[in-house]
Amino acid sequence: QVQLVESGGGLVQAGGSLRLSCAASGRTFSSYAMGWFRQAPGKEREFVAAITGAISWSSHYTYCADSVKGRFTISRDNAKNTVYLQMNSLKPEDTAVYYCAKARGLVAGTKDDGYDYWGQGTQVTVSS
Figure (cartoon, helix red, strand yellow):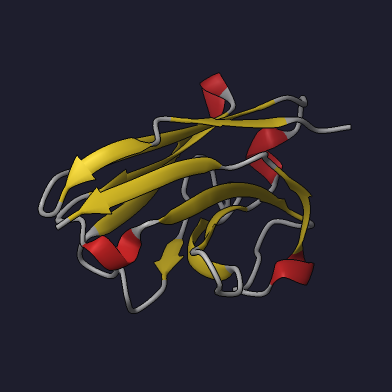
């Protein structure tokens, strides 16, 4: 069983920054891709960013949605079993509940079904 606990959400003005953290339990954290998704009120949950498990040595690859490219950065610290989402230049349309998710394998796509464990979510609100 894997547990994911997000933190770091809050209220921020447009143009500001937040860093979300997701602490994961489990001994094989580095072997799995991790992702961030978000769900705004009245909308479906959408992919934000993902980072692969260790490809070689400690190398990882990252990818993100076009809507956040250049503003959001995903990273991970395998020693701490933690994945991060650094969010800069925040916009009101970034307002949503943000979820951390563990992928089923070393690499994961942008669809929900590629992930098997989810956190409870953390609220991010960006005021204009």
